[in-house]
Length: 316
Image (cartoon, rainbow, N blue to C red; front, side, top):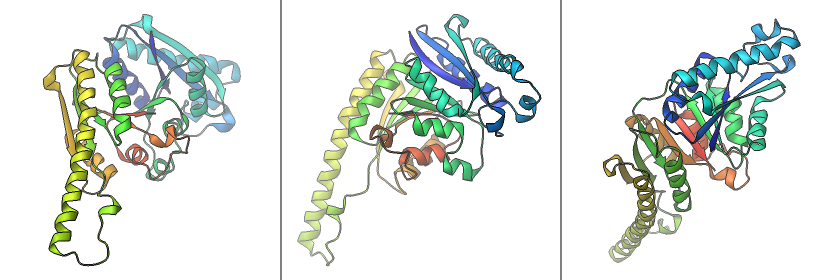
């Protein structure tokens, strides 16, 4: 039985995240959703974090916090079942007196050996998004070895999935995960997309005006580099398409695109997401795999900070 850990907070946007997940996964009979709610200690409560509103929580004595927490998970349970997800495949978890909900979410996933964590984004200021200070940002940052879905409601209802492939080695990893988690979902269409990096420095100008022969030689070498790069990516994309077809996805529902860089990889990716209203975006987070902090300049970080209306799946 496959499991997903869904962190819930009882907010309206959080409940909508629960409904979205329920509708998306309701037909996967081998899927279990573990609902987790973290109730923070009074001294650490902050507005818009993964907890009940501060005014309501501080009115309750400690002995009643479990009841409040149960109210949140029960409301989320109802949202899941109303969306068609079977109640028999739902498990409930409650963490009381949480000092840091993000770390507690990750710890619970570790304890239960759950690879996929889902968190909602409640809508924070631009500065807070930049600093990745929200619970969703911290989970994305510190959940090493996990796949993190960050759901920004309201989500585009296009039924389009973008598999954004940055480097050739990660193509297979993203393909397997997409086929496993989304292949069984009915009605989705898939786009494998790769935005080529800029021409490497070795092909730049040497600091002098090139004569006709030198210009032709350099252009020929650039074209060969582009062709070799495209052929390599295309082979991996073809494997990814085959994986989806094996899952019963129709051939007409899968396409592959390799695009030239225009404004930069992250900005071009954001523009494509916005233009085509993708509902789900699957991409890698290489800085985690290398055991580095979540780099502010990484493509995954920029997409996390700036994309709206999507289910962003960060795969490590």
